[in-house]
Every structure is written in C-alpha cells, then in structure tokens.
Image (cartoon, rainbow, N blue to C red; front, side, top):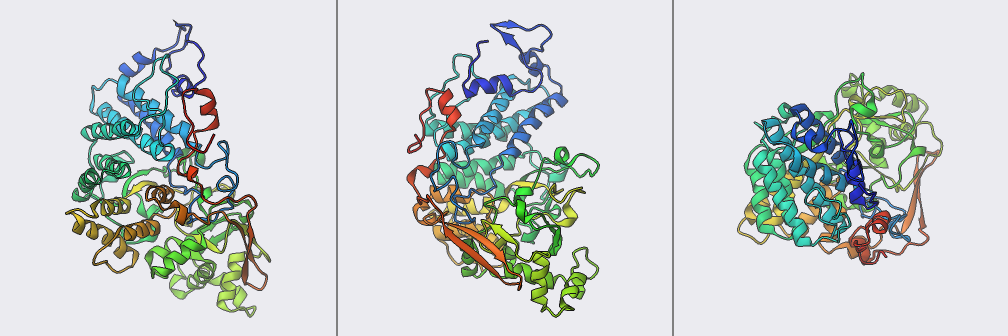
Length: 551
C-alpha cells in the first residue's frame, strides 16, 4: 500500500502487533498471515488475546489522574494557564490511544467470527470499549473525527465529527454491547468473571454518556438499570477503596486487575504503577501501612489543594469517613503517627510506637515526635507543588505492595476501579433533578452522603450534586470535565495555577508554605473548554480543524 502519514493510516499499519497483512503496492508479502483470515479463523484464546490488548490500552488512559487544571490539586500553571500551547497543553496524550482502541475494536467487531460464547462476549467488550474511548474523546476534544468502521485507504483524512453523530456512535455501540455481555451473578460475583466488563457496566457508561450529551431522561433510564439490578452497592469503609481490601467489591463497576504473583516481574504482572499516586518521603512507612517514597523525586501536581481541604472542612467532613480517606493536613499526618502508636496497634504491622518513643524520650511531645517521623530525619524537607495537604486516597498500603528492591519502584497488588457505584448514584441524582424521579435521586445522593459520615438531605439541588461529586470523586478525573459541562469553569478555576507553592518542614517540627506568583499566569480562558488536537495530528490531517483558540 502507499505510505500514508495521517494518524488513521499509522493506526491501520501499527495497531496489531502480530498477524498483520503486509502489503507493498497491493502485493501480499509471502509468508505473512492474512489479517482477515486470522480474525475469521481465530480460536477462543486468540480472540481473548485481541481483547486483552484493548483492555491494556484502556488502562493506559484510564482518566482518573485529575488534570492539574482543576481547583482540587496544587498547580504551578505550567502548560495550563501560563502560556499553554498546542504542544504543551495538558491531557493531549490520550488522543492517539483512544483511536488505537477504537481501531482495534472495529477490527474485532467487523472481522472476528461470532461462532462461540467466548467470541460473542469479546465482540460485546469491543463495542463497549470503542464507546468508552469516544465518550472520552468527545468530552475532551469536542469534535474528533468519527471512525465508525475499518477505513479504506481513501478514507484516511477525515474531517471533524458532528456531535450528534459522535454521540449516536457511543449510544448504539453500548446498546450492542448490552445484548452480548453477561451480568455478574451476585453483588460479590465479580471475582468469578474477573476484570471483564459486564452488562451493567455498559448501562452505567450509557447512562453517563446520555447525561453528558444533555439527555437526562435516557440517562435516568439506563443508570436505573444498574441501581435496580441490586448487584452493586457502596462498601462500608471509604478508606478501603483502592486497596486490596476492595478487590472485586460490590462498589467497583469494573476494575483493572493486578495479578497476585510475587514471583513475576512487577512491571509486567501488574501494569499498575502507582508512583504518581503516592506520597513521597524517603524510606518511610506511614501510619496505616502506607509506604512513602522520595519527596525529592516527587511528581508535580500530585497534592490536594488547600481549597479542596477547606471545602471539605466547610461541609462538616473534618474527621469523618471521606475526609480521613481522601486528604490529610500535615497536622493530620503527624497526629496519625501518634494514633498508630497506641497500645491497641502494638500487634499491627503498622505499629509506630517504638519509633515514637525514641523521640518522646528525647523530650519531644508526642505530636512533635509525629512530625519527626514525618520528616524522617530531614531537617528541612521541601515539597514543590504542595501547600501542606496530602492525599491518602490511592495510597499504597504496605500490606498491598509487591516486594521491591528499590523504594523508587513500588507497585500495588490492589485492583484499580474503572468506575465506582458512587459515581453511578451521583450521575443518577443529577439526572433525576426536576423530574418525577427526584425522590429516587434524593435517595441516591443520600446513600453517598451517609457513607461519607454526613447527614441525609431532605431535598437537594444541582449545587448539592456538584458538591457531592467534588468531595466523593477527588482524583478520579471527573472534576475538570464536570465544571466545564456545568458552565462554572470561569468561576471555579479562576485562581488555578496563579501561585507556585513549596511546602517546607522546619527543624523545630513546624512547617511553612512559600507562595510565589507564577510568571506568565493568564487565568482561565475559554479555549480551555476543549483540549487542542495534538500538533502532529493537525499537521498530518489537512481536513482537521483545530479547536477554537488553539491555532
């Protein structure tokens, strides 16, 4: 074939790592396996291998690393509000992966022979994942080109998509998935089928997609399918989320599985590195068994903002389930060392009493000793993009770690949720507002609130839903897109990135925050409502029109 350089052509050439047809000017290469024949004659195991590749791609772009453009994370404004360009703007990296997923799924849907229950399910999963990929493309880029089939060589330079057609592609794909996917047998039945997508997962994403597109009625209908199935619910302890204790729990709509095999290579067995989701402090095991690694090699934009912590406090969440399982102040962290030194923890692997006693014997108060353990013998630790608040959500518990030869190479055995039932409840509550189902929506939002340790509401508004989603889904990738969808970005993100913050721990066990104005900060601009199409894609596809303001 001729050598096309547009992104779709690159995907067609490179998406399949094995069993591809190799052509030069229309002549098949001898010894190469014909792609159509491979799919048509694929065994069940080969079909599973094809869909496994899609799951792997989905994990690589799972949108739960919150954009530093939100008010819930500390940000310098780098690549955000300080001169962001098409090549430096946040969140552009997933564009190609979403298209790779879509291409792999279209190959499965069009070419795999549906002649066994295994292949029927694989095709159903392909319909699901291509819809999930496009849901994220639409809400990120607005009008991505629509690739609804395996393209021919004359279809490679596609124009921007039409929103109604793009959403219809998502809806119809999920409806096809629903006809082919199984349900789990019971609320605790996910383990029996592993990390495979279920029918209710497709209903959940279908309901979410309808809400994002503006159709609240169909959103209610499909989200209710998940709720009424009685197959899902909230776990009791918020802090168990993202730990091994929550694997295959009733709250996870689906999850990315980490294999429990200590003898395998960590990078290949788990494919789940939480290095960008852990505290970083040299060689310290934090209270609760949380292992922390190198402050000095810390990732930027990983710390909760003071604004978010103050938001939780103002809601009355201080000391309650969700706050304790989401974010700590430095005082909270130091106090936890004291708490986990009590006699009730003496038999626990998390026991810190001996270390605490070393410092209290030196004349320090218990809280000063807690600070000392937090600083881990540093006289002046310094954390950039931090103003004194740390997330405990997604921490690696010591008991959940694979054995590691280096503290800088840590992986968790815990599965990672792709979507939680709490989000389904909050989406449903939003969809029910102003309808005859509002009482059911109130019940849904209250279920989330009560688990968080808050009182139930007697009635609710859209602002209640906004606040509950912000508190419940911190760090799960929804805040940025929600605020834009609600039209609140100019207000909510008005000061994001305005200052750079450096958290400094002093030798007297106190701390301070150095705050400096970020040079080049511009504040919120309308162009940030959409992610720019990557520079390379715009260069390669002459028919692709860049999003407004990003030229």
